[in-house]
Image (cartoon, rainbow, N blue to C red; front, side):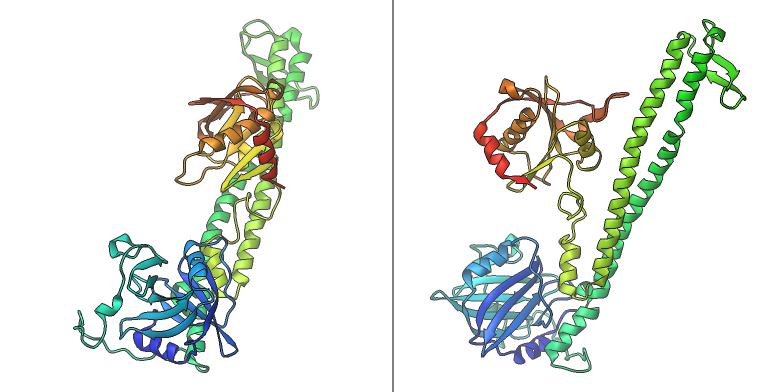
Length: 475
């Protein structure tokens, strides 16, 4: 439910904003903006929400959380209108557009808050109507820097309405308090997309889905664990073969013998082309592989259970939140991360570097390489490895819609060569390819992969670059 024009007028009539100084701007999410206005010894937090079905403007009496990272429009407002004074604030006719005139730095700016559910926006213009910036940039409407916006031309008593006028009334939203207090309380409890109930339902849907998928994965891993745990019989078969070498003839496909531990008769498959000792060695090798696989599966199960417990904790925290604005930011902007890189949980294996907005991960040995491959990288992340030397796997985490800059490839390449046996050579060739083009080497050691569709990158170690990267290392 969005506010109608009569309700907007009532909201504004209760507020003492003209002559007030804008001291602070907070943009919690892409569609929630708060202006902290000081006037006559009191600070009023004016909230403008552009969420479809819940467009409104009113004083809020709840803490407004800061966004996870600086947002463009908020930074623009901080530069242009913070410390400015409001000379006038009013609704333009019955059009649900609030115009705020702000005197700042010797110029008058106009801030328009348009509360239309299908086209809500906050637009800042100069006194002539030239658009300086908009919360939601819309080139088709001209609501971009350099465009023109002057809604006063479409409102007022002399303008013929495009559609028949509809009668509106101020709704009863609460039993007590000012209308601003009633609106603030109403939207916190049941106001559509920004209500606590709706946000908690969304949080349950998001996290319950993730936890369900994780639980299914853990169940599959548990089945593998049970299979690998039975691998002791493979070694035992090898021992039985070695104890019965004299009974095995060339071309035999089966060995029938007594199990010396139980006394029972057992039947063991053989390869007709292999002699007895080689047959036993096959079973010993299968046992070793199953044992390694069991260790890997148990590690994945532990990590999965830790992640499941962490997600349950996040959901519990979200459901206990009483401030809808904070909950909205956490749910929509992922204020509580589920990605292990950003979560305040167990440290990533290996080394991590932050180069601007990019993340580089380095595994220093086979165990760290394998852990990064299994749990911390995805198909479109980039893998780099020294071509002729054993050593680190280096991964560049993908950024959606971005290609990997050459300078970043040189950073990762220097790390890959530096953390390899080729460090002393000072230069060398690297493989690089997306993770989705790696396949594990069958029966190979932990972490060993075979790349396909790989490209070559020649790297000469740069001491200055490595020193810069060390400053970007994430502890």
